[in-house]
Amino acid sequence: SGLLFFISWYATKKRGLDPKLAALNGLAVGMSNSGFVGYPLLLMAIGPAAGVYFAMNVLTENLLILPLMFIFLDLAKGGQTNYWALFTRIGKGLLTNPIIIAMPIGLIFAFGWLQLPAFMDKLSAMLATATSPLALFMIGGNLYGMSIRGNVKDMAWVTFGKLALCPLVVFVCLWLMGADKDMLFAGVLFATTPMASLYALFGGIHGFAKETSGAMLMATLLSIIPISLVLMWQH
Image (cartoon, rainbow, N blue to C red; front, side, top):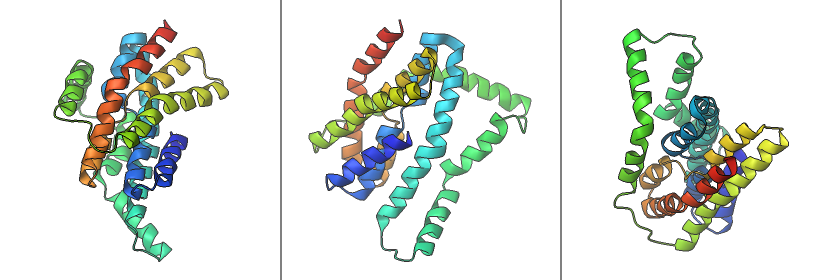
């Protein structure tokens, strides 16, 4: 994930595009839509064991890729020559970001260090059960009204990185580490899904709504090809 982030970030910078867009494109290629696309597909393919791979994937993406994006977005603002002041600004931005704050709090409960009250535990279980069947409706709602506008070539490069380069790099890395067939399948299936919807969300916040939403739409439409190939490979 980290390697893919830096490849996409560097490739975007080399094409002379905005440093903020480079950070966003790093997120696009390095972070998949694991929750709304990857997990429901893997759950249908292998059953309850999908939860283990999903947890591993989410931890990696949220503890590595999201902070990287926030750091590089902050660096892209520029205007700071004092490195100590720069690092202080980045650290303050990370420590006050609600998404970053939520991660260690969630891990406390996930590892069982604290127990949720019974009613909250039941509520979260109900929500978790409902997530998978509602995922496709969520994706459809996000895509409604989007169109592929702007520089189609740049969007195509991001789409290629997410749907072709990402699965290839994940497969090679897992294979070199001696992963078994189930791990290879789970990792590559997650990698073939389109980028996380946070890509378009943060793109809109930072002034790149057209570029990010167009690339996300393109990747979502074309993801049926690599996803189908991976599912055929498994079965």
